[in-house]
Amino acid sequence: VLPSSFSKMTWLGCGPGETYPDRKAAGDWSIHCKDVDDLGVDYIVPSENGGRADVHWAAFTATTGDGLLFQYLCPDAAASLDDPKDGAAEQRPRNMQGAQVSASRLSLEELENTSHRHLLPKVNESRPVHVHLDTAHAGVGGVGEGGSKLWATAT
Image (cartoon, rainbow, N blue to C red):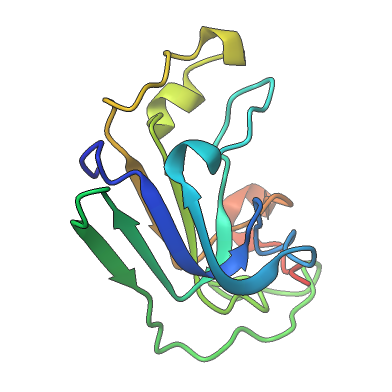
């Protein structure tokens, strides 16, 4: 959790819109910059959202110039091009070339415990920024076989 003033995210990765390991073909891999309040997607049923795939670094900054830089480095070899129907899958989805990053003024608990978007707490600039950095993310396609295998559908 970051201070509320760290409201701008600049990153090197897929964007500028929401991208996930299995939903990133339309995202440009470049340096992007957005306000934290503009990263999310207002789904009718609240859930984790606003992720950015293949992020190599992300900076969260305030208008004062203060900030925090996250840099991603994974020594693991790239995942093989496995088929979800064959044996055990890799720990990371295939073609995942960086971290999966999301940032929001809503906590994961608030999103998971709210049945409809109109019931979510009101968001304002005084709320802290919740950042999630994942090295292995299942993507929109989800996880099969009760969570024991990642669906390797990244494009």
